[in-house]
Length: 408
Ligand code: PLP
Image 1: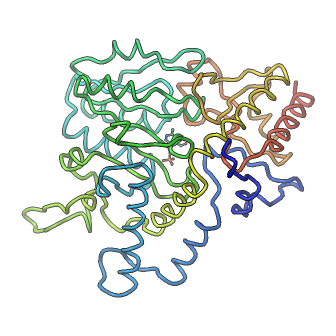
Image 2: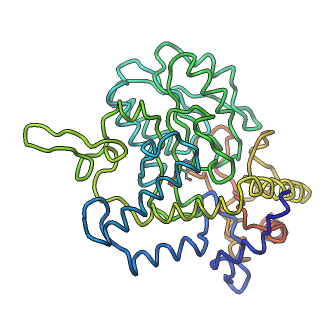
Image 3: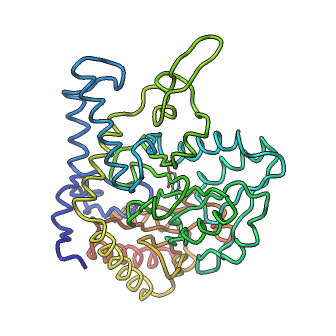
């Protein structure tokens, strides 16, 4: 493990973690849903509204220039963070959901026709299912699904069979939010490109845990949400290769995304503005830049090493309790633990956990097809972040024991 990684120091940066709920110390293990924010992010938002708030790209006055500079600087930070080739390949959106819907609209409008096929996996979040389904309905196209094994690993042989001359795009979850599996997206991208099929990667659960390099991945689109990587809500990223973003039509029309507007015809602005219609959530974008700076200051390598140590500790401890079934046992996984205790309903267990100060997610995790695959109604999901500790895992285990004693 990276010796410089100091969890007690990191926890001091997250004031929300110091509180008590129902008189018990908060144990926040719902990071897959959203992460807490470090002081630097909170202060950034606060300070911006206190002293520098102004509409970006539109004013010539001092405040507007300051805000514009900070916004474009945030784009630069995102570009560096994911190693995009150009900063104009980085589009600010409302989040992962917004980014995927945008591509489904723009790409779908131009390239999807009757009988075409779109390939996704059986472990997608609803955000990477429904927009494609809606597109298929509009265009009379077909959705094809890559299945996964009992361990939660994609069956790549099946993927090979799904790639046909009708395949027009492949959209894949990088890390499963319900199982923790890290999918072999490099293989999927390589195989798809051999057939000239572009690939969108849903990085909502990967970018905060893994070192993502979009050039190395060679993905065509990569999307993620600010709030899952210690940044604010309402902001997200759509990375697209320049050639695609130049080629596709904007998915929103309005101010800022235009070059010239007459009633006869509108021409569009250059990248990235062509895809950023209206007043964006620019303060959130600037604060996302702060969040990424924070993550980089801790070090992605140290974070990954610490989180995998936590996962190993948690997996062993939870298994040792007995009568627990873990869903998602892939060889390559990140710090998400989905499980069921005996025949206890996850919702009932979650309520007991809550009273002990332990925040987990219970239910289907916006991945109902995953639950259907296992023929279950839902799981308890503990999703760990860099500020969680082994002591917190111990408290989670106490909560499991308590649920067992009360409900089994
Ligand atoms: N994709 C995955 C894998 C997710 O885990 C989530 C959120 O949980 C989303 C997409 C949707 O993210 P958002 O609601 O921030 O748009």
